[in-house]
Image 1: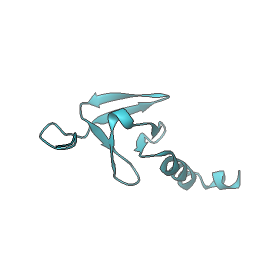
Image 2 (image 1 turned 180 degrees about the horizontal axis):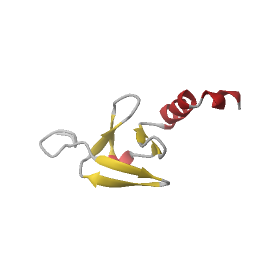
Image 3 (image 1 turned 60 degrees about the vertical axis):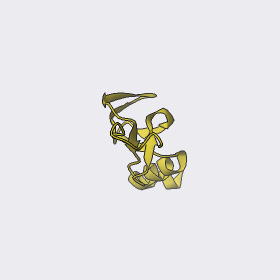
Image 4 (image 1 turned 90 degrees about the vertical axis):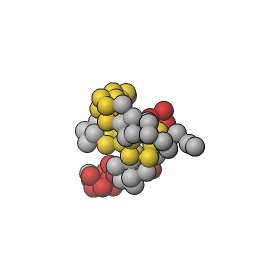
Length: 75
């Protein structure tokens, strides 16, 4: 059985801060805002404070930033 199985595997509710995050409702994972993939809290590295969204990896995070601000493409 992996850490996402069983009755204790719940999605956490998280408040994303600058350089840190705060778990407001216990759980073992969050879902990527773009892909829906489960991200274990101990592996969560990428998020947007402004949009309060977690991302599975750096590439997804960058693409989301560009989608939300197309002016970034010109830089």
